[in-house]
Image (tube, rainbow, N blue to C red; front, side, top):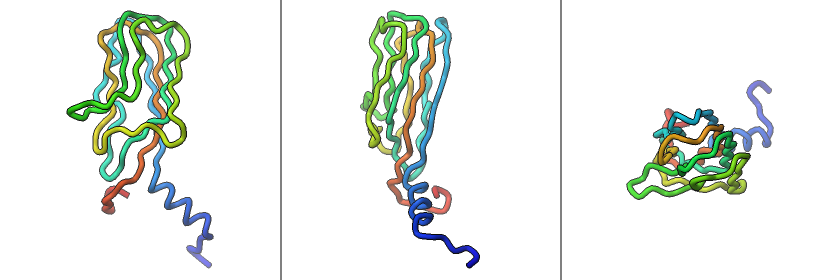
Length: 136
């Protein structure tokens, strides 16, 4: 039958609408501040959930690096303290993930330039509605 889909495909299509995975990766040098507003941008009808933050430090610094949302009272999702050691640091929040405030972006906030390394943020957009044809 043309256009016929079995039941597992229907569930797969609904899952794609309910959860949309993302991966954000950035590399930065020691003299450049890694701060970035809306590193993970909000999407209408979706909430952001962070599952993993991986910070690979090449050069340590006496600055803090935080991942937080941009609500008026920001929710701290993850933080790397001043003087974090060179190497890989992994914050893991499981498959459900850490929820950002609904309808808010996720920002990277550094107290100053100093760290050199790569930062990777993994997560997904969770459908919360209401939906319009533009948000699906």
